[in-house]
Length: 450
Image 1 (cartoon, rainbow, N blue to C red):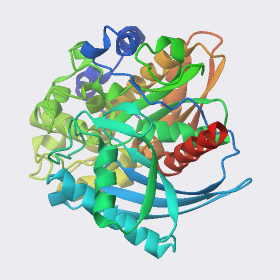
Image 2: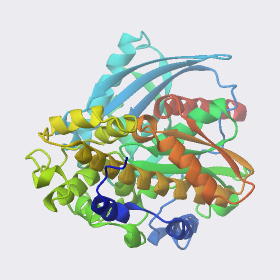
Image 3: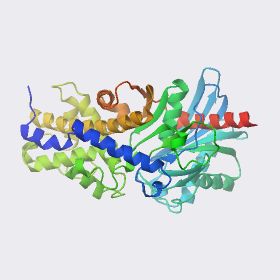
Image 4: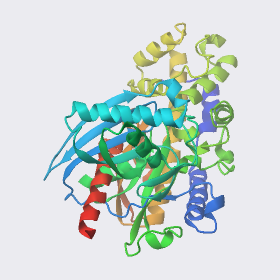
């Protein structure tokens, strides 16, 4: 029995992407990728396609002890990884970044990180050793080399002064030097998508795309070096990893034809209006808020809760993205999680029809996110034109949403060229293990050259 009010269904049509719209999005993204890779078009491109300087994927022969540092959100992790013949041991610890540091100075941020690194090394009895470190830094980065990356802009609630336009590796090196107590060689800086790809490639040599669908959204992929007009590294290797920074897709209006009033509202009220437009339609940082805005509108129209909302529902940021996953995890006709969420929001007067309506809104918003991501992945698969590619994926939305994987499999299959086969693989800790693997591969390469 369909309990969803047909008027709610009608209203939610704005979240539906037709196949024709998906293909138009793909064509626009493809053009933007080509612009990002091009020498003359890069400066004005929206999707930057930064060169990562990573040309070698793990081959399973990496050995040794490595540190990894993973900074990409409100906390960061330090890891120590021991790579052996067919195994690796990994120990890690999570450290918080207090709000005053997220919005303070860059020096304070890097000093805090360096202090945590030193404490971690003490705890793991490697305080006296000299170790190589892979640094996962999940913010838009212009790479000038494997160990040099210029921060383009902060995202995800950070605004530390004195870092934008500067080399973040140098920032961390300086902080380590100021302490003077630990010996760390930063071997590589990468972002979480690259780490995800590297981590999956260690297990699966077909892995040539890394994707994050979490607090943010981004993808990287293996491109032919000859297509990377800005590459100025050592010649001779046929492939190069490209960090697309596709979260910015749409910043010039290319996605306006599918954006809704709710997307515009989220954007205008965000910390970075006009930036990361595609990311705001997909990622976990905004998905719950999109649902909340739709629920508020439908309540005020009298389509939900008998027109009676609640102070909590009407307040920004109160509908968490994890609620979307919880509500959609209920079996059809069962509204246990939905009821709990609505009670938390002061909506205990919700009827079963209301709950069906709320669930429908959640499904429409998350399905659109999955279809947008799928259009992006299909664009990369078609561009790479390889017969079989594994996509390594990480991020809370992909990991915890009950249907995201299935929605993506179905949609990508519909959008890729005939003859291209793909697998979607959940990454095991890309930003941690992946960072250590990048450091390990860098060390492996050095040894080969030496």
